[in-house]
Length: 489
Ligand code: GDP
Figure 1 (cartoon, rainbow, N blue to C red):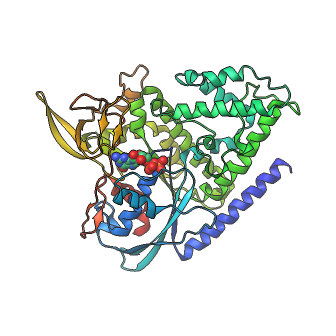
Figure 2: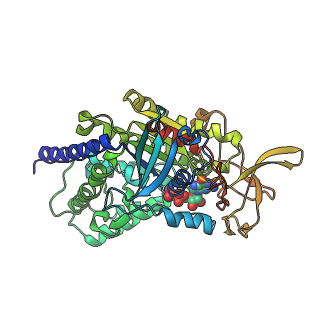
Figure 3: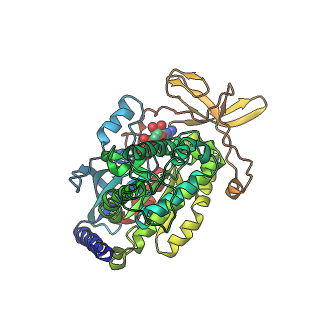
């Protein structure tokens, strides 16, 4: 099929599904909220806490519709898409409440439908349907592949792997790559080995110590339901960007599989899920990157901008020309703010705002509203002042999960510890300046152990405003107000 024709069919499919969504939403207003973020950014915890707060009347003073009593009832209903797994809300909640442990993280796309009965400010009763779509940010970072061929992707991936700490992590894969002849005959074993080493490199980059963010193809890290298929068995080759692969060559085989990856996985994800979202929250583990150091921070910045550009992919399409830029609000949320004293929450927001500043300016000119918040979906710590010598330090207190940390400190999972989390710099620009002196938060506790990678257990439930059990949180209500507040006016 000529490429122009297949694009046209693709666009017609998009327009048809948009029309269906649109006509449905005239009768019954629906918001499709995408929740994304890289692995372990906090998507599962965020959605579980959000749904629990809406169903059980959480303590959300800034979320006006709820705090003013205009929300009558909220309930779960069967989701609209039969082929997507349901977000496992009940089990995630049980883990948090009954076992006081964090639920299992997102590894695939999932969906949940909430129906909210509310009273408009004018007094009329209405119903808002909120479809929450949880999907790995790694898949989002694949969307730019829609505009790239195998040769361009290879060249970019190789260039990136030769920079900074990535170069060392990529050593084994690079050594194998040097033994390959792209124009030589296709070789399944060599391809398998290359894909294995390339995937190991991506995984090692993701490791807590390096905390790199920009690592497409995303399904190499989070395969969802397609683990082990040939569409995941390829790797970059050192080939010219404008060259063409001789038929029957190793290069041609890699190229075919890359094309299969894009057409069978990336394009349907874009068409069936991403292009149908109205609102988006991007969760960011900025603390993880801050703790890993300047390289991780720069990498996160590049990933956030790439994520942001994906939303522009949506806006450029035929579909939005017909209707509107579909995603009209994007919230970048730095998660796990309960690892910081509240004096640093605004600084955290300023750092994330700095990272997405240029991207934000571009989007605002395209009509989308963007905001940044530092939040904790579930606040696992409380605050205290701790005297150390002559110093009175603004500290946090929580119960570390049982086990041994990377530096050998052992916790029993019951005893609380107080830790001074350190201060974030007040000038975010200085953080990103070449030669920045910031080497991560100190997180030294009473015994000077390294508390940087400490995982606190979830807290017990507290009593909410109506006596209902509620999770303590930080700024969840601000996030909700931005994401759906206007739809409940
Ligand atoms: P996902 O991969 O994006 O679904 O990430 P999760 O929601 O599973 O979160 C990953 C981990 O981050 C959890 O297991 C918790 O250890 C931690 N975490 C997430 N949200 C919070 C939060 O609000 N507070 C604290 N203290 N830890 C959190």
